[in-house]
Length: 355
Image (cartoon, rainbow, N blue to C red):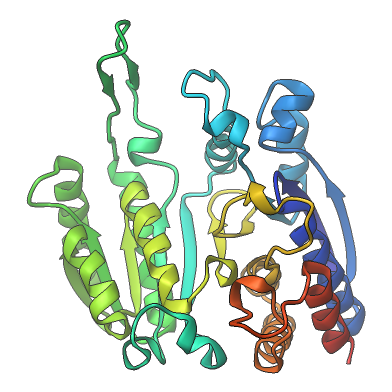
């Protein structure tokens, strides 16, 4: 099979972890007889520095011409710490999602047996937790207009806007995933307070009868946040709007024990994108200490969701689990044992894949 990939390393630790993911992707392709071609492009702070644009037209064109996008991370303190910056790296990420039509972000949340003790939650609560968060990605407050600040700097405003089409398509995506799993869907909203949430609940209630084999329930977002901590194993598939999903999925990362372990997929109208859920971790840039596993597992999702190559994705997962069980891990999860470098972990997993 021919795999044509756009590679966007981005900022901070992005290039370091991307290198390991690409090496492992190449090893998998060689093992299974696939032809891999890829081309790199800039996005985020490095793109602003080079062109003044966080998502240049050339980068978008490459993404549109590719079969999948592997994306690292964006962000830089010089923009984070400047509230008056007119152009920000994150604007590139939002534009990329919008222009590629990436309306559904899929974030698996699972535990690794050898790392259950790393979660701040009790082992009996998290051991065996396995659910998927599906976050609407191109609507809501992040894209609502009008948006701005008053001239005197004392007032700011954002608007949360959703259309029926935006809600319906991500709900159907969530039902599809629930049908492939344990057939339970939880719709998260704030329908007791927010008008857009009431629209979400109304449309979900209208669509639910189309999926009679799937149990549908509803939770207010504050209750869902509590339940993720108290009873994570009660969830199968969770679907929610953009802002709520951003917050809840980061909260859910504590179940695994580290942000450095969770991949994600963003799917929609054009080329799908695969990325770790963590940020650019600028403090670790260039130090060869960042955890590459979420980036590597994002490559596994790319094989599975992007190319329907399930055996290839499973091999990467097996290799990652083996590295965790053997203790070949970076400092964030070393737990007092030997801490391996980013490249050490990537090279160990690549050797495992090559067999």
